[in-house]
Amino acid sequence: MMPTYGRFPVALVSGKGAVATDTEGRQYIDFTSGIGVNSLGYCDDGWVKAVSRQAAALQHISNLYYSDVQTELAARLCKLTGYSKVFLCNSGAEANECAIKLARKYSVEKYGRQRSSIVTLQNSFHGRTITTLAATGQEVFHNYFFPFTEGFSYARANDMDSVRSCVDDSTCAVFIELIQGEGGVLPMERAFVQQLSQFCKERDILLMIDEVQTGVSRTGSLYCYQQYGVQPDVFTSAKGLGGGVPIGACLCTETLGEVLSQGQHGTTFGGNPIACAAALEVLSRVAEEEFLQQVTQKGDYLKSKLEEIPGITSVRGMGMMLGAELQKDNAKEIAAKCVEHGLLILTAKNFLRLLPPLTITDEEMEKGLQILRDVIAE
Ligand SMILES: *Cc1c(COP(=O)(O)O)cnc(C)c1O
Image (cartoon, rainbow, N blue to C red; front, side, top):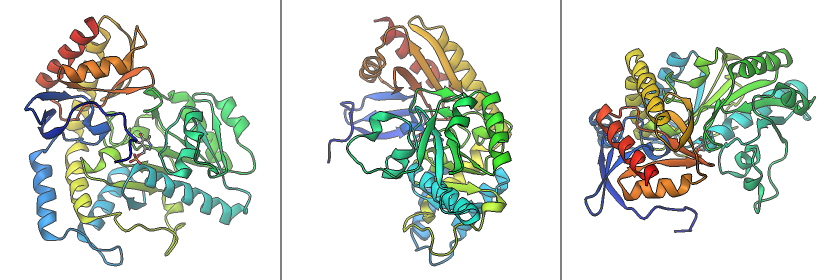
């Protein structure tokens, strides 16, 4: 394999709930969900049944034919969110590519060829394709692979003046995360997001939200924008949507529903029946009010316990998407030591980042917290 990942020296073979087991039989509490993917934990019974049943019935058809599970998933996503149309794909970057194409076509058709640029935020992360790298507002991602897609500028997060100075007659959309995940678990301020929404509405600039990491109940609502009191024109979802199989989605309002028409976008694997069956199972569980309340409660509990750990100076985030700032600038080192002691945990910049499975039990949380306490105290 190309050496593109900085891997920990662990090979995992099985898992159940929030516990993974390696080739030596050693167990690990999982505070990562595979970077926010395994929403229901490892090998949840209902999820395994849904995926196995679909694999035994029909694994793949091309998008030239209809599939019941695919239409059912599209209908469920629209019904749960009140959005009008969805494009199904395989990943976060692809969902964002769809959003970018949609915004450009909408604006170019309505206002002319020059109206195609997009404002994103500094320190954002939107994916690894050439265009989503261009959308990503971090210089470190803009080396080597040029020429990048033109037409992106980067405003400061939580700063409307900066957004205003980036927007001009060529702007078709503003595209943001509500909590910058890879950027260090930085939540946007409510007032900023609401002002931004109003600002975009007045100018017919699309507000697009990248919910690839924040979505699918991760922050305590099915999608995070619901807690900000705004309705983006477009939002994208991926990571946790399939509970462990690759799937992405780009949703839009009724006005935008027919912008991408026949032949203008497509994918071989997108909307794959097994992925759709998995996502339907995930949505049937995580969108329930009682489940969402539990995510919020568990998140609040984790946050309060993290704040009590000596050596952690602050904790930010929402629900079960949390970032812990350390007294010493040694998040990577702590994460590596945690693995040695049986805890999987992520980092983002100089923060420890926690994205536990949404179904994690109190006991699993306690075990993980104890390992983290011990490692930081070492
Ligand atoms: C992970 C992530 C992406 C990229 O998703 P992939 O599935 O890796 O392509 C895009 N945006 C955000 C906010 C993410 O966290």
